[in-house]
Amino acid sequence: MSAPLPPRVFDSPAQLGAELAREIADGIAEAAGSGRRYVLGCPGGRSPKPVYEALAELTAERGLDLRHVVIAMMDEYVLPDPDAPGGFHDIDHGAHNSCHRFVAEEIVAPLNAAAGPTRGIPVDAVWFPDPADPSAYERRLAEAGGIDLFILACGASDGHIAFNPPGTDRHSTSRIVELADTTRVDNMGTFPDFASLDEVPRHGVTVGVHTIVANSRRAVMTVHGAHKREAVRRLATARGYDPSWPATLVIECADAALYVDRASMALEDAA
Image (cartoon, rainbow, N blue to C red; front, top):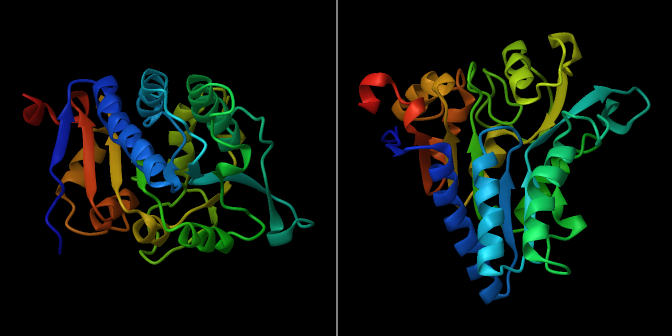
């Protein structure tokens, strides 16, 4: 059993994002000086947005060159398709809930604008698991030497991470999964253009628990907001991977940290 991760508490999501963004910017600069690629593992959704916003600001302030940066995304919604290899295809990449749209608009566009012409993240340096061959993502990440830093986020109601639902095996790898209804309800908050639960896709292609643990050289779980108090409680008391709350995988990652804001702490802990 591992010792629990002590939460590092910030006064606000913006402060949390700024601190983690500084570490990422330092890593990007160090990798450039060493002539190597920097692989950043990224989730979509609300939790990492303060990190992405602060990283864009630092990119402009420091004049960072991002041509050696790779963005390794975690998942995407998919739809059944009997004619597609593997039986599924990605949702429309322009859809409001598409992770491809999210990375293009919320991560890459601001970073590339901050970096300036010819200094941004290349188009082919944004990676996703492919529903036609999810296992290929395992090989791609391993061949890249792993992920320098993986930003992680936790589902509020069920502890899902990427699209891994409660009950996910510790040794799971990239694959197609059926989304838990609790995850789908959480995703309605992430993507407010959903009019009802019926509009939320029922399947996704996702990295697995083993994918994240095995490939992360550094992992930081980011949690903020009062609605995440149960998530913080579960994460801060975990002593190993608990399949009933998959985000507890962070405790098994190399060089792991738990970054939370004061609002996400239980009231007695926040005092």
